[in-house]
Every structure is written in structure tokens, then in C-alpha cells.
Length: 83
Figure 1: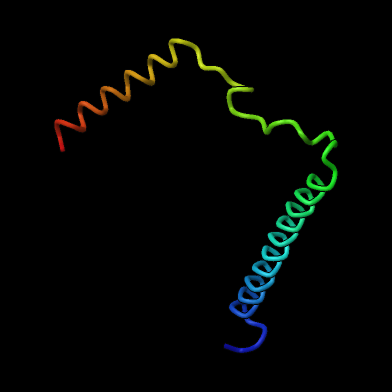
Figure 2: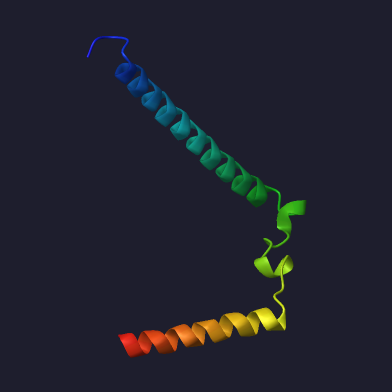
């Protein structure tokens, strides 16, 4: 390949993108570590509450639970007969 071709530009872009993603990943890891250290040193901070769980935002109705449970049972019966 000659210098400055599309292939070279693409390879340069890939290297730059990979380096950028690595820096971003490292920054996120450093941020997580900094927050953990902050929480250890500031025991009485406002960050002491529990992490949110799925049930805090969504509670399935009885019909939805029955529908999913019935589907799983039916799929299990079909799988047992075929396997």
C-alpha cells in the first residue's frame, strides 16, 4: 500500500479509536475507585443508601406472572419430550 491510502487511514482510525476507548475505560475505573475511596473515608455521607433494585421500579401484575410461568412450564414439558 502507498502512504495515505484509504487502508492506511482506516488503520490509523482503528488505532486512534482503540486508544480512545482504552483511555475512557481507564477513566471510568479510576472514577469508580475514587468513589469507593470517598465512601470509605466519609462514612456519614449521603451515599449510604442501598443500590436500587428492579422491584423498586417495576412490579409485574398477577396476569403477567401467570403468563410467564405457564410459558416456562409449557416450554419445559416440550423440551423434556424432545430431549
